[in-house]
Every structure is written in structure tokens, then in C-alpha cells.
Image (tube, rainbow, N blue to C red; front, side, top):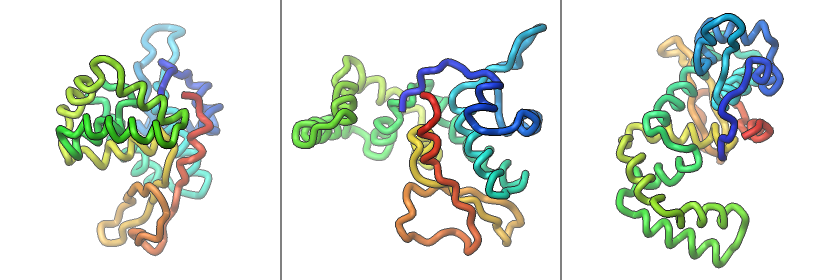
Length: 214
């Protein structure tokens, strides 16, 4: 996933996220969706980065299946926290998987590079070719290691959530925690038969985010 648009307008979010304007107004007031700036000055409009468009689309899908305001806030909080975590590195989203690999296995960049080279040679694809070209860029290893140094292993869950949000993969699971009396959100890369956190869960498929502009 490569985010190429610097910003979107409010009307873009309404159209792309498939949400009514008055609903978006409420979400803005509640801080569920966060603009780049406050649009200071007469005639100045709010601007939103591509991440906010994706969050708005997830919230719209959640609202469409009947989730209430508290549940939507839990989803928004989880996604906004993930975005804020990734923003600490001031890195391009395309680097995210490489950054995660460096955090999980420090010092193995060249091993990963060699594996990608072998895969690209044995099973060529556009995706692997693009990935190999990225790894071959001058200074790429240094950039990845510098970004990874900003994070700790405690950040990994948020970074993986960013991967799912950016790449439109997997699911979000929203459920009511009866013990603590609040909504919780978990990420699932796949529905592989692993145990869900509650007997009553709402699954939000992130694959429709692939329809959004990059």
C-alpha cells in the first residue's frame, strides 16, 4: 500500500467512506475522525489524510451493522492509536512490513533481502519485483533500521493493525466485555478457526478498503 494523496476534503470522506454528512459531523465533534488542521480562516476547509478516510469507512461499515456509538468509539480509538504509533517514525507506509521485520528480528535485514531475492527469482510477480526494487534502493536498509529504532516490541500490535488498515487485509473484531462493561476491539489477520474473544462478536471485514484511492 502506497499512500499517494496528500489530503482529502470533507466531501471526499462523505463519498469514499459512504457516510452521511451529518454523521461525519458528529464523528468530527467526538474526535473519532481527526483532520490534519483546523482549517483556520474564512473559507478554509478541513483536510484529512488518507488514513482518516479508511477509519471513516470502517466506522461506516460498523454503523451499518448496528454498532452503537460506544462501539464505534472503541474502534476509532484503536485505529487512531495505531496510526499515532506508526507516525512516531515519520516513515512511508510502504516501509511498514520491513520495519516490523527489523523489530521482530533485529539484524536480519540482509537475510530478509536474500529471501526476497530468491522468491523473486523462483516465483516472479509484480509484487515481489516491486519489493525487491525497494530493498535494492540506496540507503533503504539504513532508513528501515532508523525507523525501527523508534519502536519497541510493545508497539508491534499497533503496527500490525496499521498493516491491516493500509493493505485492506483481515478483520476487526468488536465485542462487549461483560466483565469490564466496555467495548473492546481485536485484530485478526484471518478467520482460521482460532478462538474469538466472545460468543457474540461483530466482525468487520477490512478488504473493502482496497476500493479506496491510495
